[in-house]
Length: 204
Image (cartoon, rainbow, N blue to C red):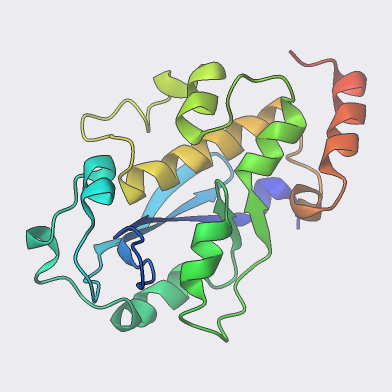
């Protein structure tokens, strides 16, 4: 199967925030899909944590304890998470948090993974910042229709998942990878691969 035919599932979490003597927990999850150039919704849900949302986390994403009162527990979402991710290449921008939270389901076997943080660094090694919002801005992707919607806002799990797929779509297009095997997106030695690719294609 080629990259242009591969089904990608971007996953993003917002969290309750860490504090002394307590582990961080998800308070929102979103899974969004990309096939070819088309982005479609999958799952988006608040998640009710065991602990209160910290002040620092609330300042980032705006999710309050009151908004989570009727939300499901994370484990209760498994019947929705599993089919939304099965058979997909899993996408995240800086995948450590997503992988850590998914350890709640120790035998899920999701993957392979594509980290758009590592990929954007390999393709564009001279950007001033590699935060998701900064890369989207640097590459002029703020005008993409999925980001131009009225309800788009950063640090919302669904919107951040969409943005990671907008970025992946751009990276695939600029590198002309549509007919390439998808394992190139997760291979070791990305920097050297894309250095050679830049010299061959001479993209900007």
